[in-house]
Length: 144
Image (tube, rainbow, N blue to C red; front, side, top):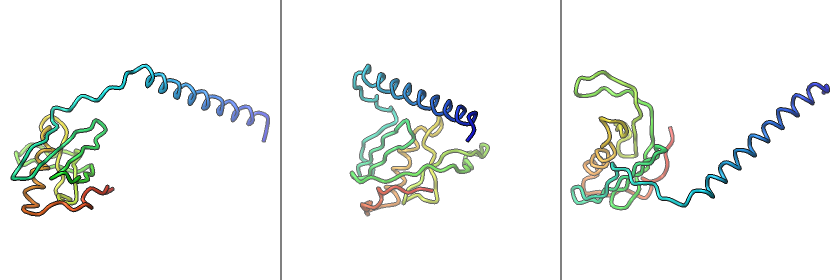
């Protein structure tokens, strides 16, 4: 290895180490300065009874929304999909959420027109289940 390569790689390593150190200090300072706070509840969150079943939905800013039916978790998986609206508006690509129950019928959850999508999904799941309940396996993560 030439002296030039040693200097180049050494400088790159030093810059990387300094960047990591500054980042860690920033994160640590931000955590220590801020008092522990709970995130404000999303106004779209719900906890209610629908057709005799308790449905509970929580919207998370990271997109990992939570859905429970009779206190059993239903894992949701976001996928990019093409939506063809029934109202005749233009088709569009968006994020649809699928589960073990609505695997082939993604539901849009976020956005202006779809701000109540998680609740619609919960009701669709209850309608599909009828008198049955979710299994314990319904809460297991599923990736596409």
